Image 1 (spheres, rainbow, N blue to C red):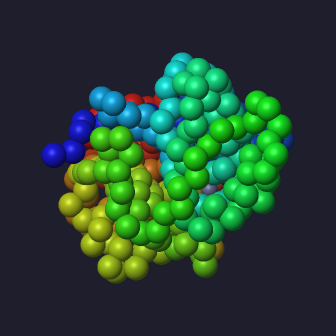
Image 2 (tube, helix red, strand yellow):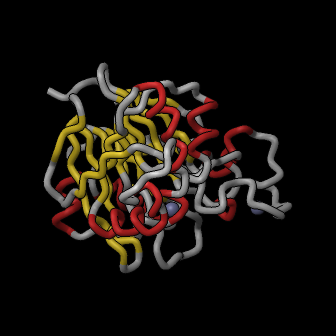
Length: 257
Ligand SMILES: [Zn+2]
Ligand SMILES: [Zn+2]
């Protein structure tokens, strides 16, 4: 049995966020709160355990706006800056809990963390820096507290990105190709979150059409799209053309799995 999970979308935007700095398009100037997208990340809560997937440049703001006071672990999907930049801001969780935050990353991402947050891994540490416990993962399933995790390797152009399956819920950000045997790992999910950047083709992200086709191919009953560019259009307009079982995610949307 899987524990019941509450999933909060902390951010649903592509690497620039929406609005994008300096942009005056109809999406970036929209008054609809659902068109304001911080960088992509989710919070997953079971009865005992709280995880975030990725620490975006907006991590501090994301934790403050939902008033989250507990964090057991961070799972990283890949080393791009819009997914790791906020790691320094786990410090308050160290202060309040008195212990390290568990971090799970594959070898590629772990190398980037050691490079970009070298002070966190220094032999002689400056006081007050983030206290993390780095676990290097591969594609073997593992558990965090009472939450089972199955890594699913997908392609972001030529970079391997980890999607994660948590029981009946699967989260895949930053992908444009999924190998057939990895699709088998996704099948049977009741809820799938997947990236849908925009309508025009992109070298490393699914388009809206490709994301819809994936949901249909895998026979997923309920799907949400994330990592959205201002080029996709306004939330309200895109929503009208989506199949009934697919929604655009938006920031602070909460779902149960
Ligand atoms: Zn990204
Ligand atoms: Zn714009």
